Length: 151
Image 1: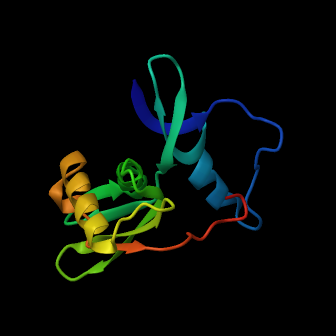
Image 2: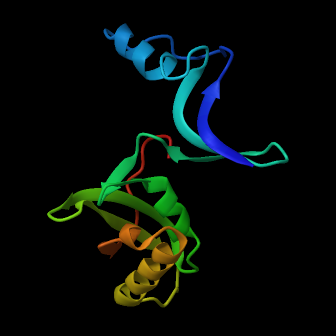
Image 3: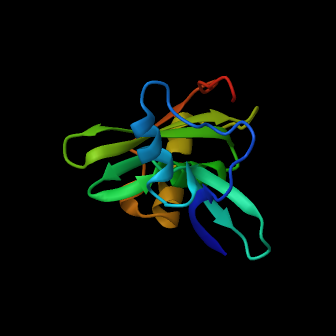
């Protein structure tokens, strides 16, 4: 059981070979961080049985009161709530903490939760699983989350 950066040691068909008009950036982003490997930018967890689980983008970090926190970590905790179908976490400017956590959630059909009840339960859950500083300042229920073309 180990977690870290997902890196690939061999080339594959369809692999990116440059960034248009910025080859230096391509090298710095994907090949320099882990020499000899292609750095995907994703975090990964590998079980003792050899299964891999992507944990999210490593560059998707918010800094709350000096603590660097991956948004995927918070989203993973939020996903464990019985009423949550999907979620997204972003950082927003906070006068005291530097950044605060803002959580968007899509509820499962007929969950019966009010926004206030859900927000309180999510703050408690995140405080227990990560830390008090990671508890979101805002929880907003929405009908859907924006998606990229690939989902």
